[in-house]
Length: 330
Image (cartoon, rainbow, N blue to C red; front, side, top):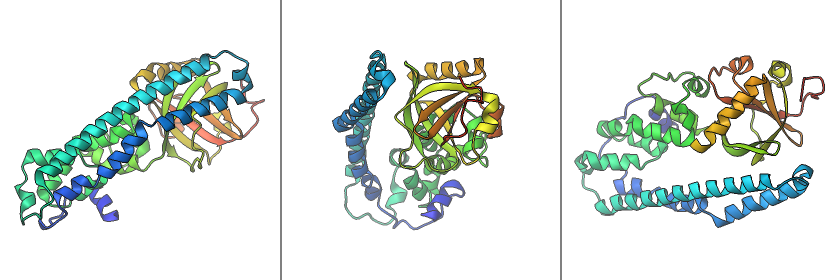
């Protein structure tokens, strides 16, 4: 609710009586969600769909169909790496679910006597809070002062934020883009930034230069209109480059702006090498898909105009405009 959302960001928990929602219902409420998410993460059907997409993409592209199979080998290795990572996540979620059920079983489903909440030990409360998502933590902050203290623990909110947007931990300049009202040195910054982090669209995609794998990316939208049902393609191939001095005239005012970060630690080397490659040539990268243009922008004067002062890669998505013949394209 709106009240819960505001309590999450602003104030301390309001005093309420001990007849609030029982601990067992708070714990068990996420059980069904965990089960479905585990199935989605380690899904044979999903891996089959990704392989089918690769086959369709390769057979429709003249360059790939008549070239070597290195692209397909790289992509299959990436799919297997992502699938393995998802399987590990599924195992961790299943373990967490068993732990949650253990907490629930510890209290049972019996009616709770008045004052039950105040009788819970600190270790039990910590276990419960650690297992909750952002919305439930917001509600927990409103139960009583003691619950508010535990649910306000910054380590909980930091964990939730970094599960969505890892770069927040290493890129202070990103905070001004996500929510300029939350300062990086604020002692409650993770709790305050969480609603802004959770509400943004994000996608994963594979970045390539022609014939060469670069890295896997997570793209977070930071401004502009929606990308529609298509979102980002699963693979973006940088086929052209143009001088970054032309960004001012090339980028449309209504374009969508993205923040790219490497999907995993293993992708960081390729990610940083790609940024250095663009900077050495004072170029922006360009990937094409039908009428859409995907522009990769290294740190430069134009990225500073977008209010981002950090070292990471930004992106712009827009409908094709203008022709590149007179814009110093390569």
